[in-house]
Amino acid sequence: MSCNRSCGLITGAVIGAVLAVFGGILVPVGDTLIKKTVKKEAALEEGTIAFKNWVKTDTRVYRQFWIFDVQNPEEVAVNSSKIKVKQRGPYTYRVPYLAKENITQDSETHTVSFVQPNGAIFEPSLSVGTEDDMFTVLNLAVVAAPQLYPNSFVQGILNSLIKKSKSSMFQNRTLKELLWGYTDPFLNLVPYPVATTVGVFYPYNNTADGVYKVFNGKDDISKVGIIDTYKGKKHLSYWASYCDMINGTDAALFPPFIEKTRVLQFFSPDICRSIYAVFAAEMNLKGIPVYRFILPSSAFASPLQNPDNHCFCTEKIISKNCTLYGVLDIGKCKEDNWIHFTVYKTAADQYTG
Ligand SMILES: *[C@@H]1O[C@H](CO)[C@@H](O)[C@H](O)[C@H]1NC(C)=O
Ligand SMILES: *[C@@H]1O[C@H](CO)[C@@H](O)[C@H](O)[C@H]1NC(C)=O
Ligand SMILES: *[C@@H]1O[C@H](CO)[C@@H](O)[C@H](O)[C@H]1NC(C)=O
Ligand SMILES: *[C@@H]1O[C@H](CO)[C@@H](O)[C@H](O)[C@H]1NC(C)=O
Ligand SMILES: *[C@@H]1O[C@H](CO)[C@@H](O)[C@H](O)[C@H]1NC(C)=O
Ligand SMILES: *[C@@H]1O[C@H](CO)[C@@H](O)[C@H](O)[C@H]1NC(C)=O
Image 1 (tube, rainbow, N blue to C red):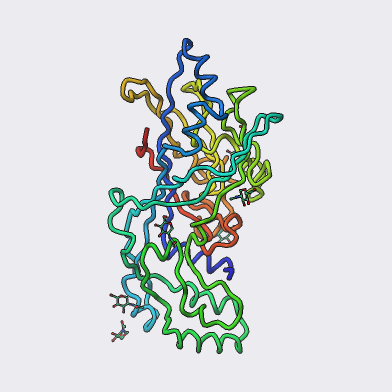
Image 2: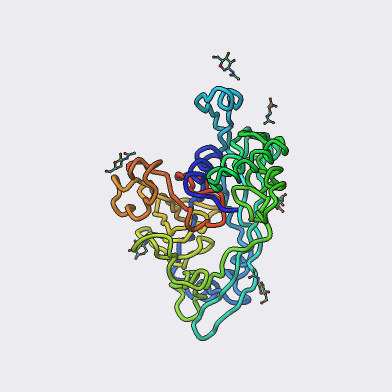
């Protein structure tokens, strides 16, 4: 079952804000004496240190969610009152933690291709509750049905099915159900072949992201990890002009010998765009001097503040004609999903070694 634009917007507004948290990235500072070893060990081929860490990354990447819990469902349904919501969160998952699969080296182009299996592990220590916390949210299937089937005869049938399944405009669902999917009782009764599972990220489990093809660094270590193609293409085809470029690595690793002045570019499939980190501070990690790179606020600024971001503003209503920051319409890139945009902001001080 697909979902049109306004339904997507409702979904986004009511289900809540999805926050992609990128940790600060710690990069060891190179030393000329060890450069040769680093060059050898940083290439992505069987037997190197980099390869081992890259196949199953130790870098912790978290995804956090805040859900808007509807406080007055009865009032809204009966008296058409304005929706009152309470934001609850964060609920944190660690993603992706599974090992890369189908790793294939190509010695001619010096690239290695792979898929990244999707998987999320709940992190109670970074969450305000459990995966079984209950929320009152819009019943997406019920709300979307009239928009999907404007025909009044069909609507009559749907209404009786909604009644029969005891569904209403609002529903109580757990966090786990909302994110990863639940069987909708109303859709289950619909006598047409429709997908009956609904969830913001459904399907996620048992799916994989990619294929990615990245440079293995054997010929040129400064290119190691940099994405050559994603899903067989050099561009995303979601955005206009340079916003559509697939830049840098997948953030799991960066080429060695990084200067403070470097802008670290990487591609994030969660938000369907390339983004970048800049030098923030020198740090000491168990005796090893490292640089901390963070996402600058300019990367998420509205086009008013940073004109470079104009091609990321495709959603005019919620962004108030591109004057607000933090809204990214990812409808086109998450075609099969109910959610049509994600709201995110930087979390500069989250990092892991
Ligand atoms: C709806 O409004 C009426 C009149 O203001 C009020 O008496 C009633 O309690 C309201 N119902 C709900 C469910 O809020
Ligand atoms: C990995 O490769 C196998 C064999 O070529 C293929 O059947 C499978 O679909 C691939 N996995 C993914 C996730 O692409
Ligand atoms: C949701 O839970 C609340 C509180 O437990 C309850 O009052 C309400 O009737 C439930 N709503 C639905 C649609 O099941
Ligand atoms: C998805 O996988 C995770 C981790 O294996 C598991 O905890 C969760 O219950 C799964 N969710 C669904 C909907 O299958
Ligand atoms: C990708 O990199 C090019 C060249 O560095 C840059 O001009 C462009 O703005 C970048 N695009 C994105 C989306 O980061
Ligand atoms: C956006 O701009 C259009 C045309 O300039 C205008 O009609 C519309 O009211 C604006 N919308 C908002 C939310 O500012």
